[in-house]
Image (cartoon, rainbow, N blue to C red):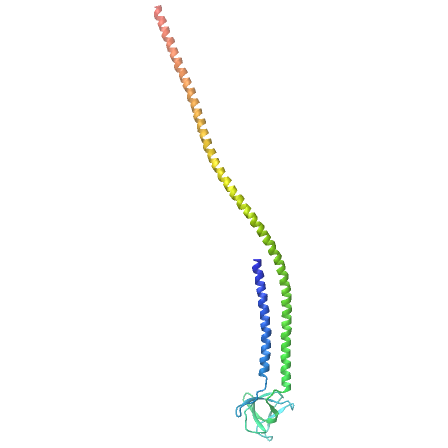
Length: 253
């Protein structure tokens, strides 16, 4: 049971360690994919809408209702704002979409295929913060794993000592069990012989009892025969005496 519990603990520790490594590799993969996605898209086909960004040359860039400065300003876009360029054939102005069902015109020189430095910096800062949190979490988890590993190693040592002690007790018990089985076999053999001898003894005792009874009956019958013989002899003597008396009385007459 102790070995089984130890094996379960080691398996759980290995599984947690593997999951931690997979999580770390997955975070790195997500970061790489994010950087790949953030790369500028170059070489869009003319006439097809494509993604562009508002440059960071000004604090805000106006979006107008038409192609020209005479049209009213509909809104302002901050640097780094993503827009969809409809690829209108105009060297100065570009028709863009800056939200669901929101379109307008912006000077083409304020658009760029590359993400502005401010946006890249903000994205990088956010990613660094996220990675820092993940690193802190992983460090904390790693610290817990190390502490758990230390505790686990301590328990392993204790369990190893217990296993050795149990193995010693088991071997001793095994030896004692072998001796016990040998003694048990001898005991059963002696018990069997005792039963056989007791059976013979009981038979002899019964025979002796029968002989004693027969001897007693014999002496009883012998005594009775002697008494009966004495009675018969006495009766015969008495009969002879009576006969002699009658003979003497006849002579006297």
